[in-house]
Image 1 (cartoon, rainbow, N blue to C red):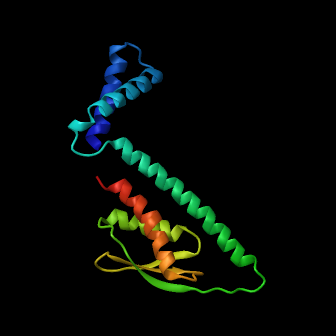
Image 2: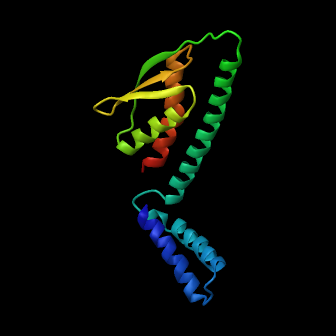
Image 3: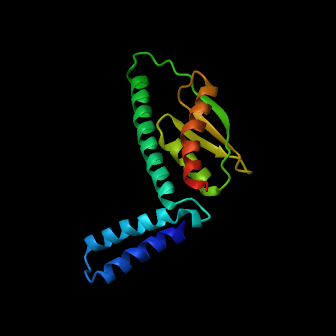
Length: 159
């Protein structure tokens, strides 16, 4: 992936120097033309294009913003009720992520979402122990984490 980014920047500078115009607009045009060249030569690369990972990272950011807004609304609805009828719970979440940065990102995304917090990560980094402020069904909570955050992180990190 880093080779593709460096190649694209090199092609952008090459375009800028060959056109004898050292402006930002020429660099951007060269970058876009270099991107088209990389897309045309994508079968020669062993890994997938870096634009796929960039797009997956953008989707992950928007997914987090959406989940953050929904969680804030649900916590607000819990707080403004006249009678608190909470069902807090602890549960163990088995993850398929293997790299340390993936597990750190997942636990950060879970903790930053209101109403949930990662309390502990097991020594083998296969399990997260999570506390939720209100959950009727633990299995649906696990499925929602697995199908949203974990799936999006795997799209970013896997080749």
